[in-house]
Image 1 (cartoon, helix red, strand yellow):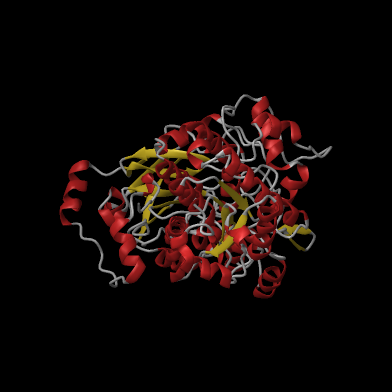
Image 2 (cartoon, rainbow, N blue to C red):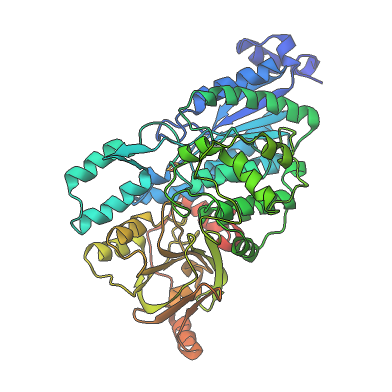
Length: 549
Ligand code: FES
């Protein structure tokens, strides 16, 4: 019974009258519109405008839209500050917020407007929990900046820091680049974490293909948002709830998309978390197996080439990627898409711009294999993620340079204490140890800028920005905070990375490791309070998606 017709809900009706609603509107299906707008970053800056359009679409299709907001944390703005610890934790808070609003208000359907990195997996996790017909609207990438005749993105900014440190760029140029790198609203402008996860939402079937890849500031975006409102009403009529859409086959396709588009290592963490929320079995090694078989077919930064998200959209977008993957038989077609199309429909609808050079075929890819590999070994018995970035398999053996925090490592790099051949080990930065699994862009950017990106390896129980590249291995499990082998490494120990064998090993005799383990003590750190305390108490291993539920 609707609120309009329930005699006992007269008090509730009085509040809806207060909002200007009529009884006719109260009888309509209610579509919650979760926006992850905050005025603290460019990434989600267009969400309020998009929410207005979604609401129009819902209204036009006979529904009653109800908007609400969540928090969001920018990775770029918090990078290299203590605030970075809040980023991954925010995924849980956003998921919990959407879930709680859904449970409180009993929405008949939901639209989640997402952008910056954590907001995408967070919304998917919440929708999986609520299991009402739902649509994801990815708010779109930023346009690339233009500086001295070339397209630039936030990746150029971080690498410029390293170039300044070795004298290849002065502060005036760095400041000038900062004024031009990010020209307006939208998410980081290539296949970094946000765009990787936006694509994941497409391939999971929860976001309509052809909407997410429209850049944030292109006028077409608002019309697409209005369509999403209509699609939400269609999803309600078709009962297209996440338990029907988010299947094992859809999850497989999402992993394929990450591999084929050279996506971010953070996708591993988020796919594991999404799978757990959806009740689907997914082991971290499975992601590695898929990535081994799938070539990178898009020429996007940072792994496939130099193209930006704008270039991808102009070339034909993710729909064109679907066409190429279907042609190669790399997708599972028995999936439900929230807008009612099939993958074959999406491929047929794809418009390929003549002469485009961004989306290739699986037969003639940009790189022969995907961007990620999963390693295990004596240093990471629970698994870890290698950002292969389309490079050939490699073996790296070198002495460990151990740091108990990202900040200490950053200082050592600045002082020129890291040399070619080293294996940097940054620990106590895991889900519980950080807490919050800080991203290491403030290390990887300067390493690349100093020309050490391919001669120094970085191993951490923290994680990486989608912008990071180089010989980087993150998500080492078990983490140092819980006494994993990474806690026992000492300066000068030999570490061996063998990507072809899928191994990460610490060449220290077992009896020596046992002696170290017997005396190991977790380093003292300031007492955490509030949300950090709750997070440390409940967060799972990175190999389990760092979930808290
Ligand atoms: Fe928000 Fe990159 S920091 S999308």
